[in-house]
Image (tube, rainbow, N blue to C red; front, top):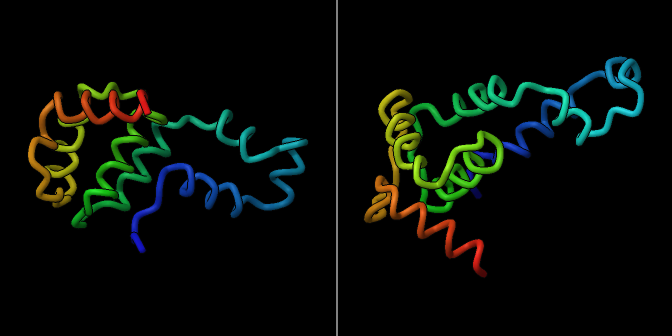
Length: 116
């Protein structure tokens, strides 16, 4: 089992820790309401801190890339740059997957996922 959680799971954890009073003050404050009310970029940065000093599996790297696209509006052709930056700035070891630090790898990856 992966020690890393996806961004949506991370947000659910934060939401579940909100007090009943806070949820009551916002009225019908569902998890979806919470996701729409937050500034995703700030929370996304906090979530990325969880990856510091870690070694990613291929599955974790692909999940991270998917979250980049889904929540941070990063285009597939820019994922390799974000992964390289995360690897350098947070001491994250990427898996030995040929081409994962190229734009074409992620364009092909997401192209194959959208056509299936």
